[in-house]
Image (tube, rainbow, N blue to C red; front, side):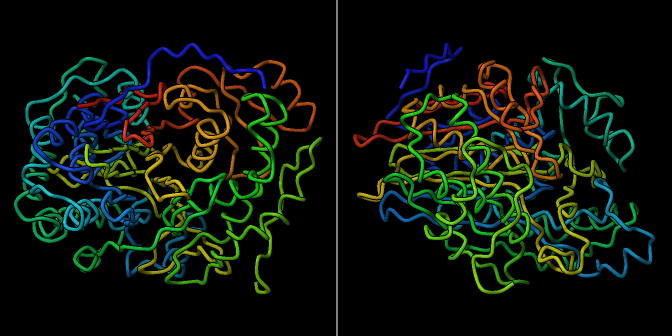
Length: 539
């Protein structure tokens, strides 16, 4: 195999005492501050997530959802937390029809599901944390109260969101400066968000789901034409679940189960395990073709089967079996693209932020939090400084689809964290993830392959050019990032892949990842995606 030499503009970070890797320097600093106070990976993850709400509201916030995987160094067990919210108990297909809605517009108030992030933060700390919420949220409260200088890429996407959502959404102006987005380096204060965090620090999740914040949420949604109720908020609960996993070349790769799309990455990895990717050049035509085709097959299944398991049976064991992967693998033509493969039958029946923390004790938290589509709906509960998500846009309105909209149901969710251990001794190998809509499972597969099959360090694996399959529409379009070899791009086109070359700010379509590896000696090695403003910092 020809060695790959990539001139990264930054090195991987090494440490034995802990690493925090996020998409914002100030959020990384918040996580490190909490670690230095004696906090663990869970404490630092929530501190960083709250700071990201302040510094990158274009992607995340307490008005959205979260998922987390936590590796406990003492027990070597991985636990999965589903912090996603549910649809309004009053929202039905019949209601949409009566209101003349044959589709659900992306920023409509009906797309607002219960924001699950706050409960998720509190539940993660209750189970795995070691510090109080007052200590954990202090850095974010300080940033919101005193103001912070906005980072360059964030400023660019803030401007896009200000024009797309905030200018027309109720109270969206609260996240602007006189109606415009802050510029790079300009100070932005968010006193409303500081008030929200102070209430949560004092009262826990009750401070968000009951009382003045909840009343404001219900009121603004009603004013915008939605139907989320006080009862919907007060009855919300996160769920602790058994993570799903597959073995990939001596590694056990963990994902949260549906309603998240992590199963997509696991299906693809199972398929790819049958090919000798390590013998192929990192960006060769052969390797890129196989990975794209494996992702096509994985999405064909996921887009049908991923839904709320409380409402429909999902054949997860069968979808993740090596036997099923072997059958699906046979559908890959090594010479030609199959742009719209059909889902299989495994049984005889029918704007996100990601962060990773590993502490000095070896605990790891793989954590993801999102509004969706940037600022979500752009709707702001008056005076509280955060936007409400639009995750309900991912529901199907086809009454025969497993992911069909229903009262109290969780939608298909794009945000997914990942965790990897060694099969041989259950030790931690990596806490990692790649944020960005339907790019996320594709990023998980590409980055893990770069680490395991390509032997790259975290930073080089994240720097590597990526592909992004359009999973939402027919035609099989594949976005290809600048830096992919011209010979590979030309050859993929000849094989029938409809390619779209992407550069500049549009490279955001390829996601933004964070990776922390842990070697057998306990040395940590972290990297942060160059497509974002952040970095991996160490103690």
